[in-house]
Length: 66
Image (cartoon, rainbow, N blue to C red; front, top):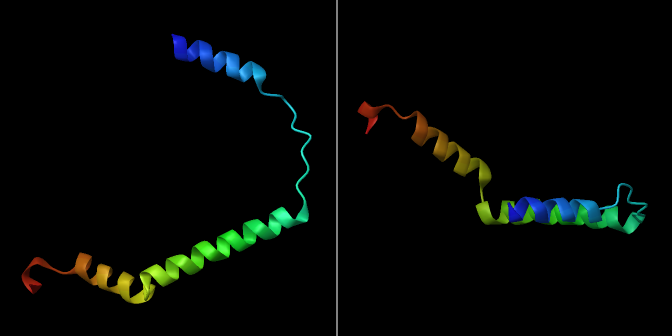
């Protein structure tokens, strides 16, 4: 009951329109963050294709192939 009352009070404080400005640097920052995430993932996995192939072969192996 308390949490629903708190949520209702918080929703009353939220404006309906934001009137915000997003400058072009923000878009560049988002692109940079996305590229960094992809690069870090590739670096972490080292060889993503080999990993995926190894997992695929492990999952598709028949029980009698051991």
